[in-house]
Length: 314
Image (cartoon, rainbow, N blue to C red; front, side):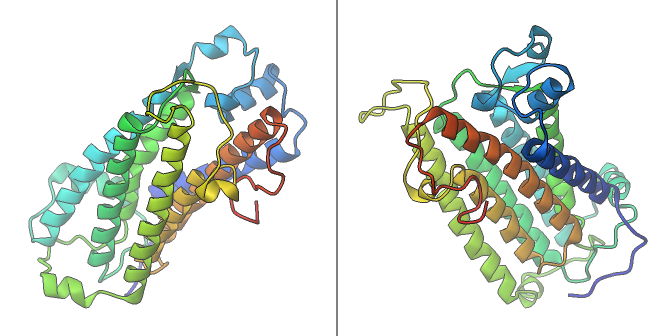
C-alpha cells in the first residue's frame, strides 16, 4: 500500500478533529466540572446538549423542550445512511468498472478532500469492503430501530439530531478519502491481489462486534416484554446478560469495535478514519458514563464491578 503525497488536512478531517476536541472537552467538563446536576444557566444548557433519553435531567425549562425531538427518530439516521452511503457504494462500484463519476460527485469529493493526503495507490479493495460493511451496519441498525427496539417517550434535542444527520452524511465520504478513484477499471483478480491479513482480521472483528451489538439491542428490547413477546412496560429495567455483565453500555462498546474493525480494513493507515474513530470513542464514552450514572442512581443493587463503557477499564 503506497501513500500518495498531498498538501495537508482535508475539510472532512478538520470537521472530525473539531468534533474530537468538543466531545473530549465535554467529557472532561462532565467528569471534573461542578455543574453535573445543575439544570439552569450555562450548566443547564451544557447538560441538555449532552443528554438524551433517560439521562435527561428533570425540571428542564420549557424553552429547552421546544427543541426536543422523539428519540425514536434515530431510525432516520440509518435510513439516510442506507440511501446515501448505498448510493456512494454504487458509484464506487461503477468507478471500479471504469465508469466516470458524475460531475457533482467529483465536485463534492474535491470540496471535502481538497487537501487530503490519505489517498493510496492500491486502496480499492479496502474502500470497497469498508463501504460495504458500513452499509450493512446501517441497514441492520435501521431494521433494529424499526422492528426490535422499543422506544419510550425519550427525546433528543435538535442539535443532536443535526449532528447525527451530518455524521452519517460524512461517513461514506470519509471512507472514499482512501482510494484513488481515477476511473481506471479494476478487475476482480486485481482486487484479490490487494488482499492482506488485515482485511481478514477486520472482517472477523466486524462480524464478532456486530453479533454482540445486535444481542445487546435484543436484550434491551426484551426488558420491556413478557415471555409471550408482548410489550408490558416502558420503564427502564436493569439489563443483564452477554456483555452487560461487564459494562453498562456494551452496545456502545460493540459499536466502537465495529469502527475499529473498519480501521483495520484500511491497514490502520487511514488517518482521517482514525479521527472519526476518536469521535466515536469520546462521544460514546460521554453517553455511556451518563447512562452508567443513571443506572447507579436508579438501582440500589446495581453491580459495583460493572464499568460504564470499556470492560475492566472505563
